[in-house]
Structures are given as C-alpha cells and as structure tokens.
Length: 305
Ligand code: CUA
Image (cartoon, rainbow, N blue to C red; front, side, top):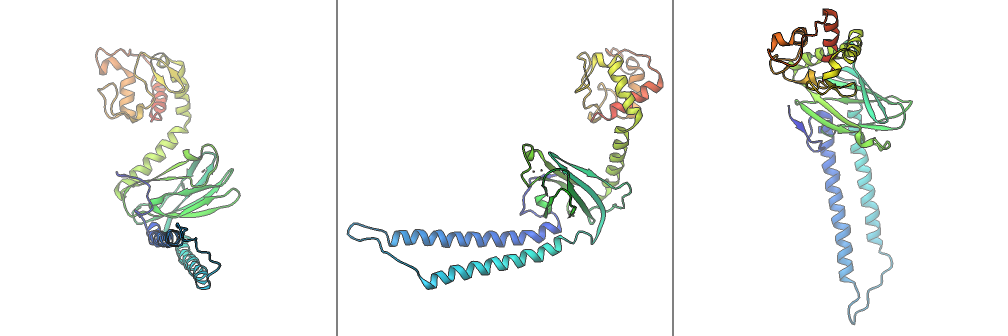
C-alpha cells in the first residue's frame, strides 16, 4: 500500500479536487502580484534613483496608479471570497453519501477515534466517512492534505468534516492549529483499504479491541508478570528478562521461535504447552501450565503488537 507524502496538489478525493484548482488560481495570482509589485519597485528604484549629476526624482501621488491598486486588489479579494464560498458549500455537505460517522476527539496531544458499533461501510472506495469532531482542551485542527478539507476541533462545539478517497493508500496529516508543546506530535494517518480487504480489517480491529479490554487479557498480563515468563522475557514497561527473546511485539512477528508461523492463538498455545516438543533443544522448558493459564497468557501476548 503506497504511503504518500502529504501534498495539497495531489488530490486523492473529491474534496481535494474541489480545492486544488482554487489553490492554483490563488497561487498564480499571488505570483503575478508579487512580480508586478516587486518588479515595479525595482524598476522605479533604478529609473528614478539619484545618479552623479542627476538628483532623485520627487513624486507625490498618482491618481491612476492609486485607483488601480485599490480597485484590482478589491476585485481579487471579492472573487476569491466568492470562489472559496462556493467550494465551502460543497465541502460542508458532509451528509450526502456518508455511510459511517466516526467521532473524533482532540486533546493535548493526540486524536482519538470512536467507530460506530454497527457499520454499513462495505464499499469504501465510493463511500464517504463523516467525522464528528470536538476537543477536550484547546483548539486543534484536522487536516489530511491529499484528501482535502481542514476543520478545527473546538472545545464545547461539534464540527463536521467528510473524508472520501478514490484511491487506495495511506494518507498522512497533521494537527494544523498550534496547540502547545506536543503540537508537532499530533500526526494523523488515514488508511484507505481496497474494498475486498476492508471487511477483514474491520473484523481484526474489533477483535483487537475486544481482546485488549477482556478480563482474560488482564489476567494474562498479571500471570506473565508473576510466573516464570518474566524471568526470561522482556516486554517493555512490564518485564525485563534477558534469557529469552523480547516479546514486546510478538503478535506482529512472523513466527514463534523460528518454527511456528503465523503468530496466532493456535500456535502460541501449541508453543507454550510444550516448547521442547515443538523445537527440540530450545532453552524454554515445558512449564506444565494448565490450559486456563495458557489461554490467558496467549490472549495477553496477542495484544503485544
Ligand atoms: Cu493539536 Cu496542534
């Protein structure tokens, strides 16, 4: 899955495509204004400067010029406002076609996302996700440049933003309102899955969530800390054993002890039940744990991603 650098001029969805032309129009206008103003300044400076024997020319006022540099910027500002407003109408239509609402809460310094328990979203490439956003402390801002649109998260208020992508990929974003020391750490990542993979992802995400919050996992964590496991294995923030391999990311590894793959419930159970039986000569002994203890430890290890 491609990870794209955040970049406004590479639209990956309808909202971004609405904004990009306006971005280029304003950019072009700014370049032209810069060229005329700075060009004029440099030209006038050279043309009328003081030279040996020639005193600098003195001017006061020029009706036509003053009229032009009042009228032209006014026309520009009004046109940009109209163009921006037209696009805002499109961007603010967050409901049409949206088939999932995700609640977003900003706080110093992270975003949290609450997915609906029931989701209809099956076809994600054509569907639209509506974000319902608020903040717990100060103003934050949600921005994924490639997907377009930028909305503030304001304490005590609810704001809405729609995300819609038309290509698969991983899109990066960033909190865009300075919110204190950790502002730069408020990174965002939107992953657009192919339709065929979304259901699997959602299923895994729900399983992971349930596992992290289960009583069995909590019991497994305590057992891991108090049983022989702790003496040999390191899990960052929990245990510091050095004899065996660290298990901090065991659930994301490719195999167990190089012999059992993938790392899943079945294989972890098989391994812990009798390591020398699976891999003769391994340093990990058979601890003769009962099935219930093994289940709890396995559930806990599966949360270590
Ligand atoms: Cu949150 Cu900047």
